[in-house]
Amino acid sequence: MMKMYSFPCGGISYEDHTAPLQDSSKIAFLPTISIIPLVQNDGDRLQAVVSIGDTVKEGMLIGWGHTNIHAAVPGRVIRRVFWKNACDQEIEALVIRMGGSFEKLGKREDIFPWDGLSSHDLRRIVSDCGVVEMEGSGRPLAEALRAGGREKRSLVVRCVFDDPWLAADHTLCRERSMAVVEGSLIAAKMAGVNRIVFVFSHRELELGKIFLRQAGGIPSEDSPLPVSLVITGSRYPQRNRRELEIALRNYEKREMTGLGSLMILGPATLAAIYDAVRLRKPVLDRYIAVGGSAVKKPQVMRVRIGTRIGEVFAECGGFVAKPRRIASGSPLQGRIIVDLDEPVMKTTYAAFAMLDNHAGFFEQQNCIGCGECRIVCPVGLDPEELYKKIGRNSPAGQGPGQGCHGCGCCELVCPSRIPLAAAIYSTQGAS
Ligand code: SF4
Ligand code: SF4
Image (cartoon, rainbow, N blue to C red; front, side):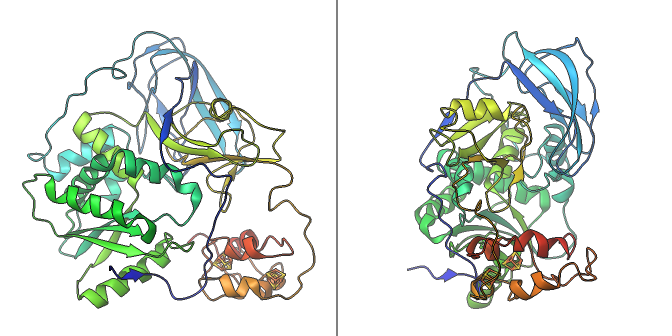
């Protein structure tokens, strides 16, 4: 019986029956029109290296900057488009009409060795292939994985599923476990870490054991790099950096194993590293969890970057009725999609459409002082009290919500539907 590590207080068991099942993925149709953004999530603008009218091949570089972007399908660049997303960020994109033959799809894949490559060579390949952190702000990986000095470091492979909207990562771990595991070994070499820690939530213990076995079976000139399996709880927000670190420091104490500083990466990022290094394949597609109460057939899809979100919903049977809210990410922290022509990006791990009557759309009421928000806050804040203070001398970065990491637990349990999380988080600045 393996010990389970967790964080001490707060959190919720988050269930959502409108999220897709995690058993298998479906490959989406290739998009006739793809829209490839020249702006990353963190606002970094890329320089287009093709012009309107140019013919592009599948996987061809079409934009570069801190990270590269490639044509997900072959075809012709037919125009540039601009729009503002829900964060008022102006997005510029190239529109490609699909045509011609595919360079990679349906062809036998060559497997390239990596044992003889230096960490510098590996970073260059990963950078050329446009690999970013496939969640969050999508920061470029080559920089993040620069080898450290003498400092002790561990690569943490975060397979913690505390949110049913992580179904895409879960399915990826089941369908491409070898790619994720080998991607971890490659990332470990790139970053020069001392240890790899596979972290799985307790329901996925068997999957964790498979990862551990596979890591032992992959030949590498750098082995034996110590590899451990740590089991955590699945209470949300266990995968959040703070809560994950608490669990891992407890593990470290109990096992008397020095982990040093933690470099945390998710399975989608590690599979993209594998594709870049072993297959010389840029980031052309990704797994996405598609669902919500408005969607006829929620499922995990494997979708080309640049596919319009509207097409992805259409492949899931379309809508049962007009959705009230469409967003990408988890309902706990999603980003509103203002137009169904918005494309799938490298960081889009989920997309949902919710009906009017779905939880969260009820009228806001006055606080009834039930205290539920205090019970679930993992940081030990008093969201009810903080919410009252907001607005009174609370500039961003200096407000009363210091320490809040925007997990959304307080808001989810609030019977009065008070928008606590966004209000509190916004007063403490970026974390
Ligand atoms: S959003 Fe902030 S205040 Fe609310 S539960 Fe999470 S950490 Fe606590
Ligand atoms: S959960 Fe909502 S209603 Fe209950 S104390 Fe907190 S803010 Fe008030």
